Length: 406
Image (cartoon, rainbow, N blue to C red; front, side, top):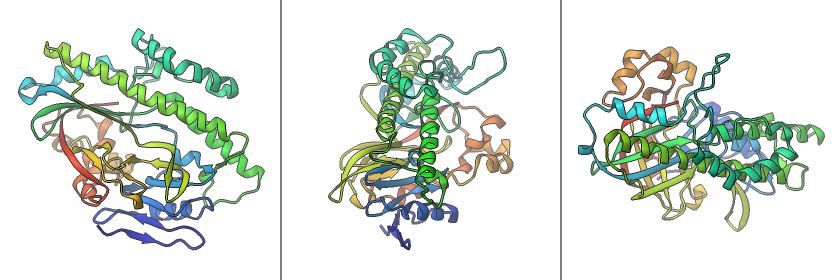
């Protein structure tokens, strides 16, 4: 496959896997800004779903030496995908899937409403025992430590958001693979507490830049260098939020399996094959002889043989993939199709009738409130997959039949 290389005066190059897909000029400039930072190692890699983000480009892979850019990691820390193959086939599903969708919506808090005097329906009113047990076992001690060091994090949506979906592009789906086997797939991250951690440390990084009078091409590229006052706390906080996100997906998966089992009146085994991967995160990896902090902002790890998930839009197909370990892309691939329209633009340009037609055959919401997530707001997933043939190979192709949106 051809890789486009943009040379950046005074910085490192940008290598992009974007043949045959839209690569907007604003995203190019944003990537050049990142590539001009003095601590970027070798180059910046852009995935085929690349599009403009806040501070850092979505669909980018950024290796850094001795520093991390909190806005590049973003505010949905640990956001990612989970997919599980079940023992069900298409013939086990009823012709009308509305009851299945309703059961999932009742089992997993989703969306957001902050009407005065009413509980937010996207959070637990009272977290169930399964949630509180996971919180106490895996997350409570780390959160207490973080809250003591950064009191602003204490009064956040934390345990009451564990096992909840959220809004926007987060979803839960039932899909059929090429053999008509049923999969459950979902997309979510670290919810309210992860958002607060992200925004808090972005602000601290900006203050660090002001303190040292460091000029940046974009203030959202403010960074925390190793040895800085808040660097170690941020590494701890990111690790904690990534763990929260992973457990969040596991709880939602378990509750979805239970809801589907009850609705169909039969036990569902979802342990046949499972993948749980982040696509907004940072971790230490070794690339080209250096231990770097590798930030994947809307990108998935695609080490050789590693399984990952690349979803399309709510009317398109999705893919379970196996990484090819392409070092030029820092062993990464896209995290989805990537937007071609902003949410505002989609609501202006796409009619409700078009959205209904684009989601034909999918049991999902077909109202104006979800038009910002309509298929035309995203790139063609087939073109995106074709642009990254040297990054991953397709293991399963999934087509959704039920989609729950936040």
